[in-house]
Amino acid sequence: MPDRYLDLVNSPLGSAVASRVGLPRPAVLRRYQAGDPLLPGPLLLGSTSGAAPAELVDLLKSVGADVRDAQTDDDRWGALVLDATEIRTPSDLAGLRTFFAGRLRQLLPSGRVLVLGRAPDGADIATDASRQALDGVVRSIAKELQRGATANLLLVDEPAGTGTSVESALRFFLSGKSAYVDGQPVRLGSGEAPAPADWDHPLAGKTALVTGAARGIGAAIAGVLARDGASVIVADLAQAGEGLAKVANRLGGTTLHLDVASPDAPERLLAHLAAHTEGLDILIHNAGITRDKLLANMKPDQWDSVIAVNLESQLRINDALLGSRQLRDQARVVCLSSTTGLSGNRGQTNYAATKAGVIGLVRSAAAAFASHGDSTINAVAPGFIDTEMTAKMPLATREVARRLSSLQQAGLPVDVAEAVAWLSSPGAGGVNGQVLRVCGQNLVGA
Image 1 (cartoon, helix red, strand yellow):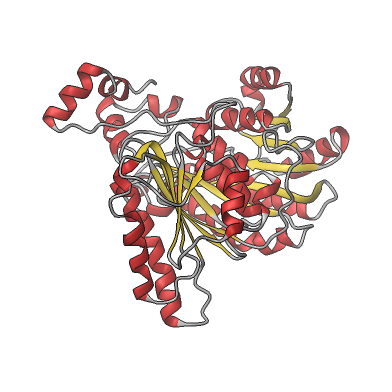
Image 2: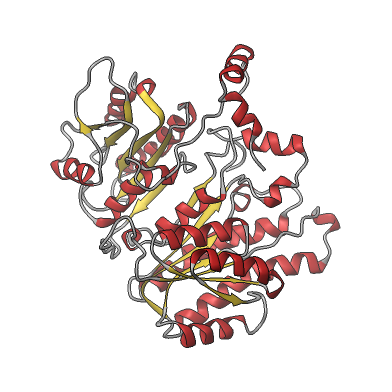
């Protein structure tokens, strides 16, 4: 359902009224369109230790940023990027205040703030405390930004200007593809991350399978994977066959009728892959159900069905793939979690259990997938996303939920799909066992 309030406050009359009475004024977010520039304006690059590394300057220029290292009073910035990888002590943190103070107001609408840091490693207590402090700084900056701007933290293991994972992350987080990712830390490890032949079609030559793909977020994921060059198999229940066929026809993909919770689902999936593909490169565990009820009133079948579809099916299919020849080297598996799995939700104990379980799944399975030819497994945790399901919510509940994020609006299915596609790409090989929230920085819960 369209966000009519968003449309209203971005009209001349609505904007004036909202400003006068102090109503929320969410911005129209900059989302990816083929051919658009990476950023809406130049990028100001700084470092807490003096001059930014030349390698980082060159890398930012290579991804399409107009990089500057100085400013005049009237400059307006498409992005502010700070290299904070050399922070060692609490006093070093003052470099963040020095760089960002005053300049945050110069960000253009839907601008980007990126901080590059290092993850705590246990070698020194003061250094770890100072590195962890970056997380609090970036999350707080994200809450201060306006007009659709976002802030995120990239924790790099290699020098800040090297590695395909860093390049891939910069292309994602600076672009409109990350429109609804805000206030999030992502660690870019040293996993194998080959550069694609074509950054505009990074999934060319890859075979992807998306479960629960007949509609909503699943259909959007299939669409973005196909846009990025993948050959897509869309899977869903037989009773969703008509919708599934429409998705496949639109994308030039193929269909697979599959109940992921059935005992023979892993075997049927492997048989289909053996018969129709040369192996699977990308698996998206999107299939999921809800059976909401207060725990005091929940029936056993309402509990068991959600556990079976949302969590057990992923465990069984992953096990089958890792023990087969159908999962190719440098494969990417992305599991759909939810912010409900991080913060809980009244009346959704079964659903929250599964979505938290998915987070535990990807963290624990990361090593097994890495040992399978440098493959990865990660999770995406959407917040409030405008879908057919949320359109059925009571109006007041839906409107309140839409505003409870730093971006003051719901996300769209494509926002989830863009994050999934990035984690599915070759260049994201340094990201493994992690959870990326696509929630506009929810202001409630974790």
